[in-house]
Image 1: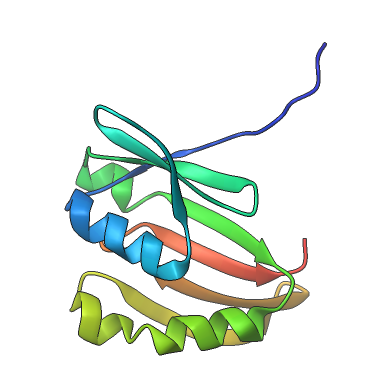
Image 2 (image 1 turned 180 degrees about the vertical axis):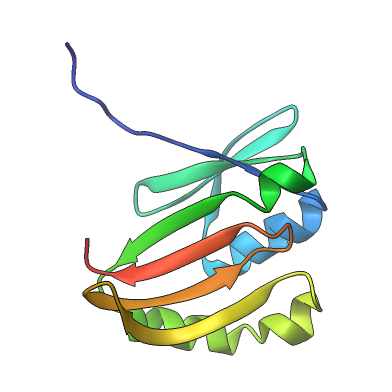
Length: 121
């Protein structure tokens, strides 16, 4: 069996342009675009942002982003003023806190996709 290079999820977008702005504000960049999706990446990792939305699906998608320094991510997220820039669509659910043997925080994107941002792996 050959080596796995990457697993890349597809993420739904209720308002594609708003979600794209959210993710580029976080620091993701466009890698490649196809008709109804854009692959976004950061430091060799990424996902496909789809111009497609099903509420039940979006409300059940959870992604975990592992970072070296959660406090720098917390500073970045605070500097974005998510509530002011995205209204009630995107939310900061928790600041960095200890959980399950490490530090983590949670945010949602404009479509309701839940992101666990965790320090370490």
